[in-house]
Image (tube, rainbow, N blue to C red):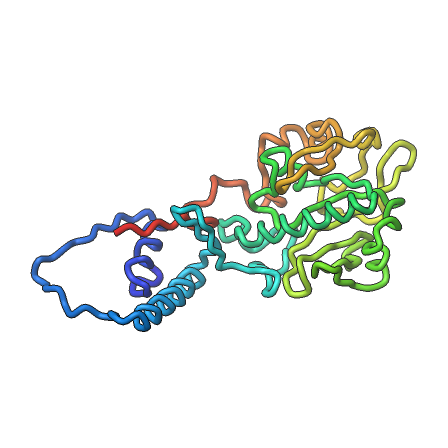
Length: 301
């Protein structure tokens, strides 16, 4: 029933696997066995044992697919992706990442990378004087919880096309993919007329920047995604003036009258009724079970 019942370090591995499957573990103490000879008594032997235990524990977390561990002291340990290794999921097909089909949500390390990239982009846009606002599912996440939707895989941002020349990285990205001073990659997307900022050359967690312009009181753009119902024109008055809202730990620009804006994009009740990108194929379920996103580990035997 357990995927790795004899994994070491033991009994931590048994505790985590049984907890994920909602099984109870009972420790039986026997009086038949006597205490053996004390091992690892020298400081050097104790140090080697500590190093070996840490290596085995890291291997255990990665083998079991646990990305983030929160200790009872509040300290956090990461065992998922970072900017030096690829993100935890592959190509997204039909706007549906693979983890959704596995009844999971975005790995916490990927969400952390998205937050980091988004904050970097907002800082650069604001410093350059580029007017921007949250779009699509990112605005839904900000409205619901002030954060990225827990199953989302990117961040969507609208910008004024006329402001693109104000940002040197966007200007350079028009002709080539460029890495900025902090290791983030700015480039022109291959799927359409918009820009993309990635966490790194290796890790492709990203923010998409869609250049809009006003025409006859309507905000429009030159590149669309026909399968995305929320990718549509909207009245320019939603941006006059721009409002602000908490998102990824900071204030960001958003359309005014957010609820009306979101219902125009997604339909009535969009804020209160979560849906996956393609809800015709996969309905929004309950929250994923214990162990699928963040595992809080407390070893107490």
